[in-house]
Image 1 (cartoon, one colour):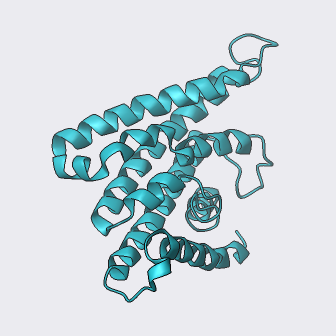
Image 2 (image 1 turned 180 degrees about the vertical axis):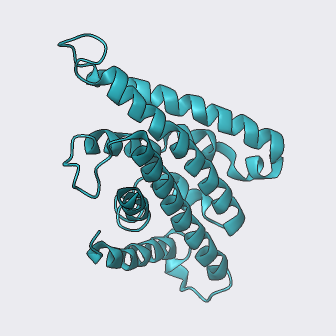
Image 3 (image 1 turned 60 degrees about the vertical axis):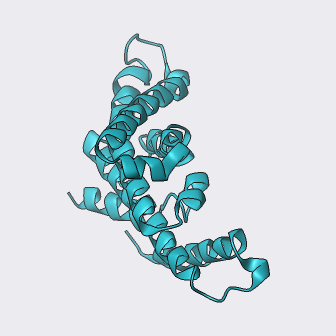
Length: 208
């Protein structure tokens, strides 16, 4: 249980997909113009992570790993194809649900909702999970069960959501701020993201 909690909080604050690895920056910068759409996309990304990472873990452990299906055969080279297929299927499901139950959010997210399928944060989480299976079980990053995969996926999704909602709130305030003309738009946004990443680095000193 302790490892589960450690992995969960580490994925939010220390191994944050945005501030530690800068994954998923396209939609992060494009959609984070207000809190509502930022939160909507964050929930969608979290849900996709929460479903795809455990499924990809099971595929890696019981299908793709050495000697899983055939003795002496390692199918890990197929991981990219299968992981992408799982992600694309879940994103399609999320897109249909959002379009049906929240047309306004669907319209606000626009092209960036189906683009979750190619969001590198989603694929990155599955690849990090695959890498961490082989770590020492005493390592705080180790993923050794489907529950560890769920904790890692949920923490990564919440960390990504937290990052985009915070930026959305700041950008809403910036609309009413006296920002120097040369820095308006992308300039001040990149400065804010850099400062937020530097602030998040404070958590890297916490011993898990």
